[in-house]
Image (cartoon, rainbow, N blue to C red; front, side):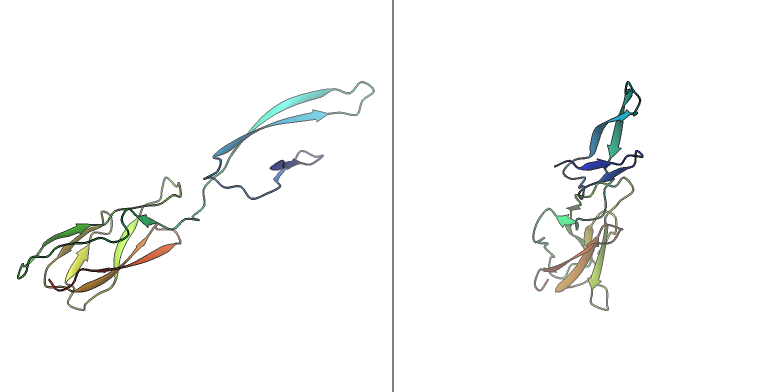
Length: 146
């Protein structure tokens, strides 16, 4: 089935939904022909780039991230959360935030790098990862008593 329809006045419309993850661009050849006694025509090449929309949620490289906290430690590195997004947007960046937290703020996560650090004994945290556009993904992370 043809993905594009060209009207008699030259308007190009899509005949179906396009997905950038399937094809990033299309080349069309359009013919224009008059109705003269001897019809004349010309040919034109049209390049169409499919821009991406925010239709994929960010995904983490691991289904669960485990960290270790040494008993009675004051602070330190716990784990590095790493994620990716299938949407292709040059201005897009992932942002890491902790969404449910002990009011004493035992853990902190770097919003840009996903590095999780602690400052006190912690039991369970939840965090959200989102791609600074629309979608969000929630992940429950538990490591037991430190």
